[in-house]
Length: 62
Image (tube, rainbow, N blue to C red; front, side, top):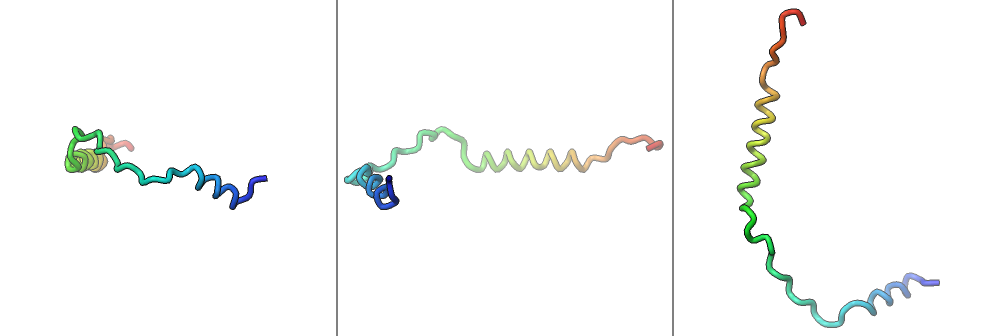
């Protein structure tokens, strides 16, 4: 039966002994800037709010 200390020792034994290599630079360097996403979100929210504020074209018999 595997106990908690035995499990922790098994995990520690499998860990690399040396330092980890530095992370690679980001692959998505051609992605648009953050402000483009913010502008897109603002436009979408403005469209949704303007559509929801439009009066409904109901007849006088409602």
